[in-house]
Length: 112
Image (tube, rainbow, N blue to C red; front, side, top):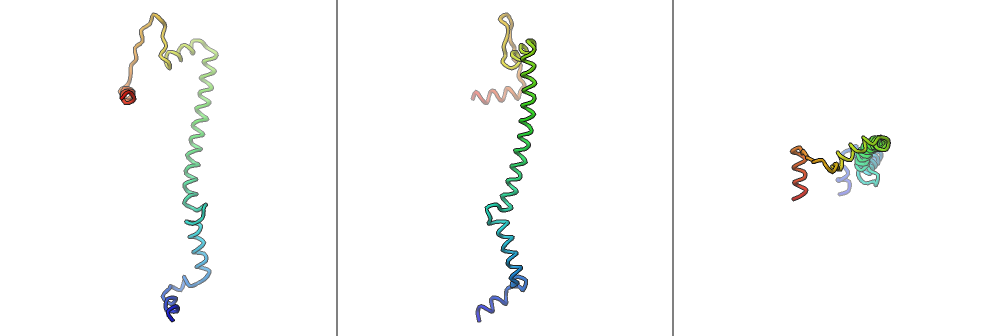
């Protein structure tokens, strides 16, 4: 008797075995499965981020290849690169380093 009272309180749509099966299936797919929808969305976001990173790195490799080719072919470019990147100078020259405020703050943070 108690069992029938409980069943009568459940809405008719949830007493249908097909609806109940479909509802359990969707709950399983959305939340419980190892390849659930929530983890799939996270994986898709990560995949999109990795594709953007890959594109950036491929462009960086291409620009670095061009710079290396320029450095190998022209001594003037090699001297310019050494002066700008490694602060190299000739023996009779004085070197003055001019920093932007942002660079100055960054260097100050590293030293502290």
